[in-house]
Length: 73
Image (cartoon, rainbow, N blue to C red; front, side, top):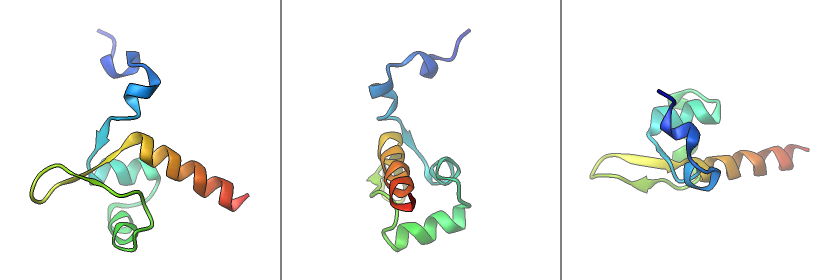
């Protein structure tokens, strides 16, 4: 069976929410580095999933990575 997420329109896939570990991996950093970047407000703001859990929208991460690449250029 084909992965359902692969069939989603791009705009819907951008709203997918990643946990901290997956967001760090997506961003290309380690989890400790991700947490440091979060505390420094150097990554997009998370959404609160529960009392102690946060998540990051894929679209926000993509936009942040594109902005970072443009600043480096």
